[in-house]
Amino acid sequence: MSRKILVLPGDGIGPEITAEAVKILNACRDAGLDITLEEGLVGGAGFEAFGEPLPAETLDKAKAADAILLGAVGGPQWDKLEDISKRPEKGLLGLRKNLNLFGNLRPALLYPQLAEASSLKPEVVSGLDIMIVRELTGGIYFGQPRGIEEREGQRVGFNTYVYSESEIERIGRVAFEMARKRNGRLCSVDKANVLEVTMLWREVMERLAADYPDVELSHMYVDNAAMQLVRAPKQFDVIVTGNMFGDILSDAAAMLTGSIGMLPSASLNESGQGMYEPCHGSAPDIAGQGLANPLATILSVAMMLRYTLNETALAERIERAVGSVLDQGLRTADIAYEGTRKVTTAEMGDAVLEAFRAQR
Ligand code: NAI
Ligand code: MG
Image (cartoon, rainbow, N blue to C red):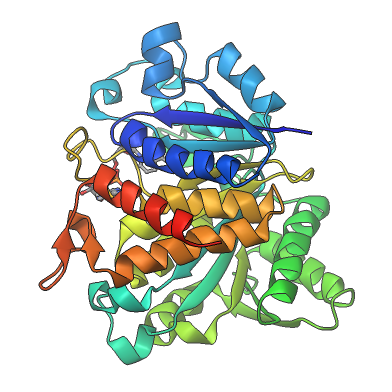
């Protein structure tokens, strides 16, 4: 049966980078992959057309799709919107919540060709390949009650950090499975010395470990994990953590690779349906100028093939094509340095396409 891919370009550089990724999806179809592509509006683009960042039509298409490829949402023209429920970012949160995309996979992989882009010494980062598994639909970002209210003559702000055993267990299983497919090492990050919710987190991870005797489980407090990521990042294989810690640590880990334009991500639900997107935002400062790096979005297509469509060979073929254009010295502005050849967004996309077609 033909599988449905929904493409949501979004705002800013979103349309430019997804256009390059769609070239690769079409090439996969030419290579025999049975997919149909549809487009939809989300974020500021959804707001402009329908008055909603997540129009009902888009949500319906998203529910019917096997996988979603998202560019990015947001931009300064919508930051002034009084009604925060209309802000572009709500489109993204709405998709995550409605599709129950609780499992966020954020690889931090250093391409050997880009070692100079990292702020860390080559010996500290060369060969870096970490997978962060972040819980995405629970924890303190969603816990109730929350708010700002008047108490005893002054305002107090409050949020609730809550995880149920079943929420911890399902993200734990994603992480153990991931570790099993990689190098068999899983580090669970918590703050179990202070926060009860993460004491429970640790207990559930320990219990799950019995089902995965081939995976070596360790635990680390989040403050130490932040330190270790900068000190000796190669000690990690798979990291599993809650929503907020994962938000922060995955951005830090991503930056060890030095290039925001290179990093893909996946967000999965229990049935394997997934949303795939670059880690970066809509980059309004460079939108429409052909400066954006499309590789994070193209690598998100590779993740889609691996994790939702179970087409590992095609995923690897895309990743090899990306490696090949980097070998050729082609660079968009964000990853360019002396001795490399600067190319535009579309030139980079075309080069990957050509390298993809040249392989089999
Ligand atoms: P950003 O990631 O859009 O940009 C940060 C910096 O990185 C900018 O200098 C930008 O030019 C550069 N950059 C980002 N992606 C690039 C690429 N592919 N190639 C070359 N350079 C790239 O983050 P920022 O500036 O904080 O946010 C801009 C807008 O994006 C805001 O409206 C924000 O809310 C939204 N945003 C959306 C996200 C999403 O859709 N998932 C995630 C993060 C931010
Ligand atoms: Mg973040």
